[in-house]
Image (cartoon, rainbow, N blue to C red; front, side, top):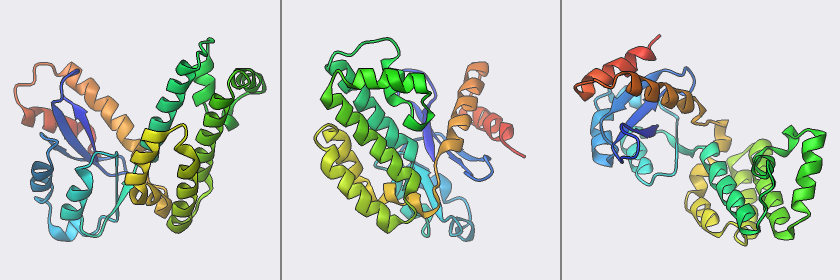
Length: 232
């Protein structure tokens, strides 16, 4: 489940629900309010909704209630990439604070370490040598990514995340509080490593359809166009 704005720069959100396995768009709701999302999704038979095992979402506070009401057997899974996005944004802010402005420094800091070429890694080490604080913050970011890559159970994930939070609070205080608040949902990722990655492609296509269909006269026409674009 995810939301997008119908108009750039406005908080005029719609909510979209997709099948993470097939990539099919299942529903488009003209709202981002808990009660209205619940009402729309409850139009589906209970026996269908009871079969849903996991729902991957971002950290909007309304999603857990929606999932509990609509999908009684589903675990709330906080999308891994939304968590890493918060950490990366803070790391980049720290780069700016310590005054490192070299061309490409942001890219090198945020790129996964294992994907760096030898030349890129050398440049990164030169950047990190300029600030011990930034170097430590970078290492903490990479530790979180390693937790995501190698943890295999929810129980182990909770233990490792709590240890990570203990050291992360020094450089990622606000992010650490957010992660602590959503810790169980974040660690539910380790059930079957479900993400909202499929929604990224759906969101991009939906935004394209919105631009192309500037003349849509009502939401139902727009909804029909979206659902038709993602049907088998």
